[in-house]
Length: 130
Figure 1 (cartoon, rainbow, N blue to C red):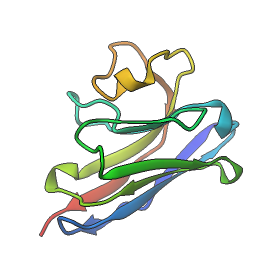
Figure 2 (figure 1 turned 180 degrees about the vertical axis):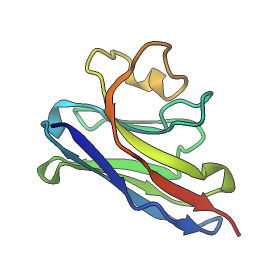
Figure 3 (figure 1 turned 90 degrees about the vertical axis):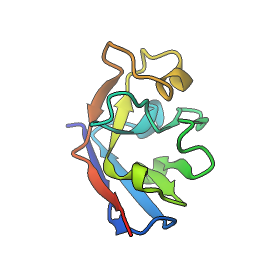
C-alpha cells in the first residue's frame, strides 16, 4: 500500500540546518508531485513542492533557505533546511499531491478548500530554539 515516512526532524538552534527525508513506497514516485507542509498552520501554503519534471516551488517564507529535491531511484524526497528560524518549528509532513492539481505554484501561497493531496505521512518534528 501507499506509504510516506518522514524522518530527520530534530531540535536545532536558530541559524542551524536540518535535512528531512520522505521515503515513499507503494507507488511510483516519479509519477507524482510531492510537497512538504505543516498541518497546524492553517493560513500557510505548502512550503516546498517538487513537480514530476523536478521543477520546484517554494512559499515566500522559505525561499532561499529551503531546498526540495528528489531521488526517484531511491523513492525519496528531501527537504534541506538552512538558516532555521524559531517560526520554522513544527511538525513537517510530506504529501503526495493529487495529479488533478494544475497549478502547483498556487499551493505554496494558499491551500485550496478542496482536497489537494491524496496521501501524507505521520510527520517529523522540528524544533528551533536557543
